[in-house]
Length: 338
Image 1 (cartoon, rainbow, N blue to C red):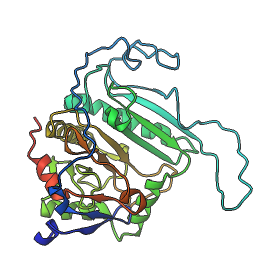
Image 2: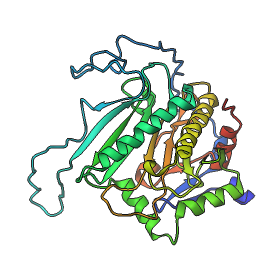
Image 3: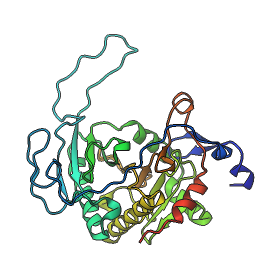
């Protein structure tokens, strides 16, 4: 970006969605009198007898969690989607549209340890999580009516996590959700691979790169909405986790550890975020333009006690940010990852 763009309001196009984000870098100098959160200083035991995700404990729905020693997957006791649903009557008026949506929701515990987030796990342990994600994507995607599998993690109470035990979720459903529809349209409309070419631009500029290894790159996207949003991309064109080589899975595990450790050290707290993997739809159709990627959306803005809110302009017009992606990347890049 030209120097003048670092100080004046401007908008940037999100090439993955076709939507714009307003950037207002001059606003970083404004005083803050908004909501200040209580800093979360977590100190958790390796095992919590009151945690329903710890091995051997009874879950909220009455089922008992297995005495597991690695990753652990089970069907969500309070699933947002159900695989067997009755046909629903459509609204009478044509302006009102609704249709049944089948799905399967699962929970994946990263480790039996109650106190180990991705940022605290070693690469071998994170690789086991990557392998579990890969198996779930393949298993659920093979169900004939499942067209989309989303793997995601909400980390921290600020992001709505209902249990502090490190875990993620897998939702499989019969139709593409909104974000997948937008990203698929943009990638298919591009001549070639949009994200392969975009990554090449980012590597050549370097200003938004956070960390990298021979297989993966983590960067703050040019069009980032959240203050410390990042995008994780494989260097080799890959559509989904099962297509990764062993080295590719190792690389993904390594980059996830590197990135989350940087997050945790930025403000000295276990960094909250929502993270998700966007992979090819699973309806059996080839999607050669789709490039595997992971989004990290953290809410913290200026410190561990000041967060970004999506209100006003964001709800009524479009996303807006103050700190530039280049500045955010420089802050993350300056954090130790070992």
